[in-house]
Length: 232
Length: 314
Ligand SMILES: Nc1ncnc2c1ncn2[C@@H]1O[C@H](COP(=O)(O)OP(=O)(O)OP(=O)(O)O)[C@@H](O)[C@H]1O
Ligand SMILES: [Mg+2]
Image (cartoon, rainbow over all chains, first blue to last red; front, side, top):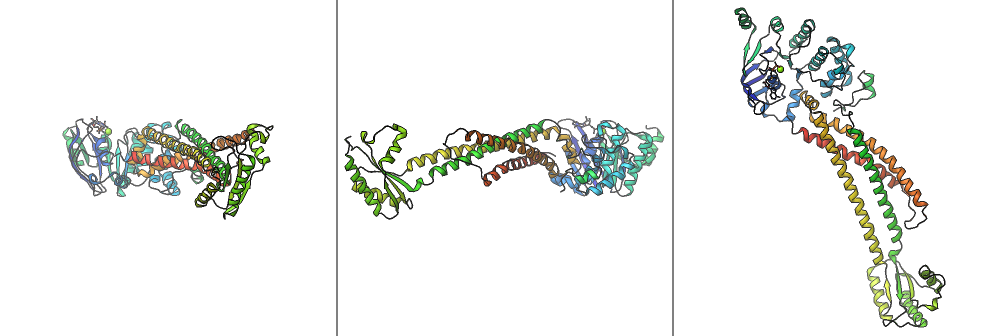
């Protein structure tokens, strides 16, 4: 359902960030995305949420080849993808509530439905009392939870999260990971970029490893075996 | 698609009052500048428009009646500069009148009396002039049922045959001058309207471009969440429309006061160049429609600008 074939990416005239990336993610799968800083994790996610187009190679989302689509045809695909950005990217002039409601409004849902869904989710991420606050008056962790709520509010078919637990303490971090797990059980494909070895270990999903512009998939067993051998 | 407007229902649902647009379009002084511009353009447009109305009223007044009238003049001197005897002049005038009376299509032919002649020359020569002292031409005022060119030609021929010195004055020259003059003024009004339209388009397009650049990140984010171009355009175009309505409303108020004031001053100036003139219902409606027209133009410009910028993005 997501397929990359020999994808290469460079920004402008810079060096290749991704040089030959090929992989397939089945619908309903759950992967971590790992690799050293600057390896291109954010760039790979950006390709998946259609924020940029690859310099070469094929990207296909939900069975559609992206290269062949013009920009107006990307909107319906993007509406099925929830993204938690590394730097949140909340809209500063909108309250927490309205930020979370944004994807539903874009999809033209009615206000009653929006209110019910958003309130429920705000409860869930523990922000019910903060829903009328503006993002820049919230703590980093609170903003991150708003960003996560916004990404999952419309039950996306694909959820991409860039370091979603980076600003959160372990307890809330695990709670949010459980939210992702729950979403995954309902059929959402999930890719989470993270440095957090604890989370990778305790949830044990296969990991996409990015190194020097290339990607390989490690399932939990080989990952644990390597860890035993003291590779890291 | 639902407009992302804040309405009463939204407020009841507990949605923050702050939200009207996703992008903070209401921040900054740019909006106030546009409002002022639209206000001024509305005032300018109103003045130009009512000027045009007054002009055409003036033209109608001056030309009405004149079209089916002509004057025949028999000069008091022959081509050598010798004064013609009053009696001879009168005979010639009667001959002309006889021709006119016979002609069908002529409703009236009247030789102006001495008293009328005196009144005509008074403004130029003063009250004390005694008609006998200066040579006065004979004037015959003619009214036609309809000013057919054929009828005029026939009259001209018949009268020339009887009294070679007679001159037909159909007011045509004077009328065509007037028509040309008001036409030029009207042209000026049209050019002014074009300038107003052009100014609005340029200002709105510029403001939208600046805003789009300022909120590039926010616009990109909306795109990434799957917002179609239309969703983004709606926010900009509705914001523009609101600004223009507000500006236009102020403009109409200021314009109305300005026109009222002009009318009052003119009424107290005691000159009678322009006929009495007041705005009718049609004129009022047209003046009131002006800000709507400007707002519509701004709306369309905003939409086009946003869409054309978005088209160039990923
Ligand atoms: N917009 C950009 N323009 C130019 N170069 C970029 C851009 N974004 C990223 N890069 C470059 O691409 C490379 C990969 O960056 P990326 O952000 O994808 O790494 P990352 O794996 O997400 O790192 P981190 O773990 O620190 O978030 C880096 O060398 C970076 O300098
Ligand atoms: Mg990154």
